[in-house]
Length: 267
Image 1 (cartoon, rainbow, N blue to C red):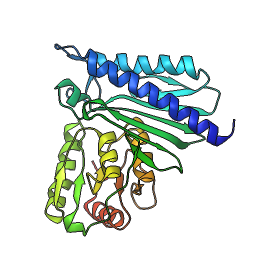
Image 2 (tube, rainbow, N blue to C red; image 1 turned 120 degrees about the vertical axis):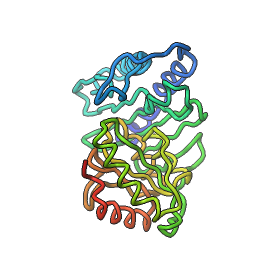
Image 3 (tube, helix red, strand yellow; image 1 turned 90 degrees about the horizontal axis):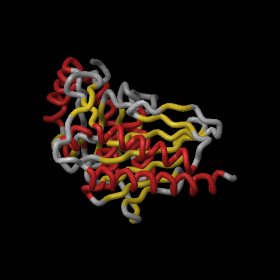
Image 4 (cartoon, rainbow, N blue to C red; image 1 turned 30 degrees about the vertical axis):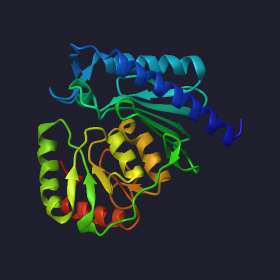
């Protein structure tokens, strides 16, 4: 199978898996939904629906592409033999989901040889499916997605997020405190995947965060890039847990420089 056919197949599988999981999460959310476990701290939660959603997705992949590897937030991990790896966040924005807030999503990316080929972020409560294929642009509900032109730094609406470990959150709050007077305003939505898609759709001028995991950013990073954003971390580095930044050219460089000055990669 050539790479074009592979990307087409992977996109179809990702879309179906995301929509199946999203419908299950939207329609099956129990009224008494509670915390099943915690991760980095007592407020970093996992619900029973996170676990069930990841199982739904991985079972679907096992049926449709059994030779692929998987990396999932809730523990799914297998190497596979095809060279393709699925990177899954079964609910990105779990705390939003727990509280019945609408900004949560299912995020699925497919990588081959370390390069992300396909990304899908499905936000059921927003009625939006964001998708991208490497080299083929980004789309939201089948309409092309494009970043906003870069505004002057002082007019930028910037998204960010905060971790669940108190010491890291305090440091992130201090960086945000120093950044707020320099930009139009700050937004904190609670789903990194949606934030990256909002950059792709022009709903945010830029986004940055420290502490993301591969499943938080893999799909959204590709979608943002295919919509015209630059993405990266510290100067010369790719997006990572140390720092992730997404913004159109011109604004990206300014935001990266400011975050470097503020030491945004420090806990």
